[in-house]
Image (tube, rainbow, N blue to C red; front, side, top):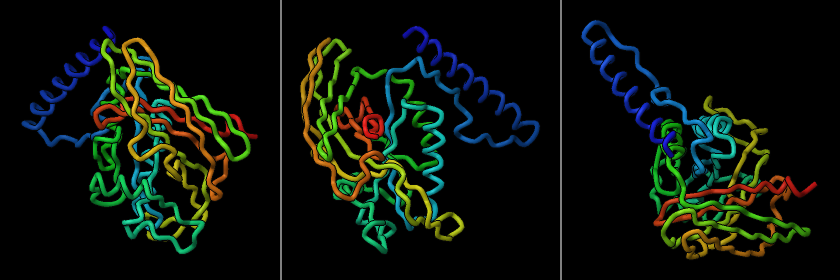
Length: 275
């Protein structure tokens, strides 16, 4: 905690000095514009226990959506398992309409979140289920999220028998107070090959779609649970995989919610236990 506070103070001092230099420089000559994501000091991964969630709203007919997907991919390369991305295709937006059923990546829950959050356009993102951001700002939002400590940990034990999945999610309370929480479980799928309109307005028919939300395993806003200080709570779920997914490409994404915000996330890749 001391290291984290020192780093925050260090960041604030450097940002203040940078601002002073920019003001002085503007009196002498024109300043070079610094990209927003380059104005912050990267957070060391050992200084946080929190995993960040980006809900990425996208569509296969959205020519700017591949740029957002690239941004999400680059952020995942940097943050590793400290960042989980879930891509949602809302049926209410015409840019998700597919010419063939196998290219339809919509699901009712994607549309429900889309309407509830009043997403203005595609691509667009919601960080930690509460912070609405355009994709150009996802890097800054992830950096801010990574500097916050989570009061809980989340683990998911998964067993697969044919198309049946047993999930045991365990939430441990690290804080001094009892917590009223919700646990959300989603099924996502990677490595889906299908068409996508690209930034040059041409169609890439071999585009690889990743972390697509396929189904909600719990209800939209999850299963409620109360966890006392220093204790843990386990939630058991049984789920049958839908027929339109490839099991080894799927993931179980668990989200712990508190007061409408995701405070912890865990992604379990089924390829770890499926040949």
